[in-house]
Amino acid sequence: MDKMVVVGGKTLNGEVRTSGAKNSALKVLFSTILAEGTHQFQNVPDLKDIQSTSELLASLGIHCERNGQDFLVHSGSLKSMEASYDLVRKMRASILCLGPMLAKYGEAVVSLPGGCAIGSRPIDLHIEGMKALGAEIELKEGYVRAKAKKLRGTTFLFENITVGGTENVMMAATLAEGTTILENVAKEPEIIDLAEYLNKMGAKISGHGTAVMKIEGVEKLKPASHSVMPDRIEAGTLLIAGAITGGEVTVMDCVPHHIESLIFKLKEAGFKISTTASSVTVQPLKQWDAVDITTSPYPQFPTDLQAQFMSLMTVANGTSVISETVFENRFMHVQELMRLGADITPKSRVAVVRGNPNGLTGAPVMATDLRASACLVLAGLVAKGETTINRIYHLDRGYEKMEIKLGKLGASISRKS
Ligand code: UD1
Image (cartoon, rainbow, N blue to C red; front, side, top):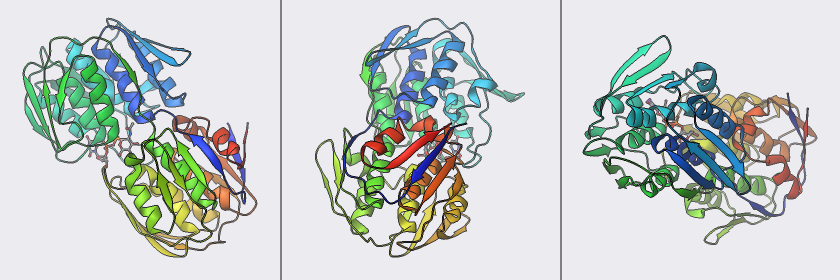
């Protein structure tokens, strides 16, 4: 199993490019179930989660191939209506095949994803949404078994904001009979990206990016071409990497507007940040102030940047209060940061971080999930001596060539088998 070894103390400088967004690419790949033919994508990142999605689609009879800059998906009539446990357990987002299969083929059998390191993450709202569209759903032997002769448009209010739930029900509603109104939907940029691809395929979706979405059902969708949006979480992680080492780093090929909440907090901490239409630059700063953050659905501070921001706060001046409101168990990285010498008191969904500018020292640590891995890499960049991050496969699920990108900026980082 690969490990990442980081020797702290190097200041990062230079320009780095953002890859395509994992959380958008996965969804547009699942949406190909809705239309037979060849779909053409660009900017699909080369990640473990994309491989897992390709494997799942292949098990259904849909074949993906990389062809230079293009990522082609050859969608045809499904040979199986079942997404098996072995494939779904690798990646929770696999539940996103439920809506498209149900809408196009009138049936779907998808393994329940089960719990994961960052909380129980139920799918009750996905299921309620499908039921509202007229599906009959049974949970049996660890599988969701869904059936519907024809989905029918409806008005559905999400009790809580859910990104995956919004995407799943939105995809299902594209082929429903009549109009669907979805209320209290998530507004994440990845949802807008998916809605834009669905509209290119012939769907009639409006209101994406706002709290209420309207989907007028159509009879058929056709394949189209789409360039996946830049990964805002990767962009934010790279920006924090520059900030934490006191360097000047420009993150290119991103949408600064997508990480406005992070930029706002970095400025509050004392960093000078400048933006163009497609890049963000953090200026060198020796000492920064502790600031509080509270994670919430977009456009507020993303839960997917909470762990990375916590690393920055462990070496800030003063005490920061970090509140996690999206997931109930997303402080797994705290114990590992403490192994590096961080002074943190976690209490349920709040962590109090007492910053110490020279407080981190390298140690072996364990990555517990995707964003926790990134937070440990960032902490390793400023810890004195060597930090070895075990279970780095989590990082490979969501960050494309992280060590190469950081290495080019001047970090001392290497992968060891
Ligand atoms: C997506 C992202 C993930 C990000 C999260 C929140 C992907 C592949 N993953 O995850 O990186 O951290 O959004 O921005 O895009 N919930 C329910 N019932 C449901 C569904 C969700 O109670 O049916 C709860 C979850 O347990 C969680 C909260 O709602 O507490 C938000 O989850 P959700 O927005 O659905 O996250 P994901 O789509 O799984």
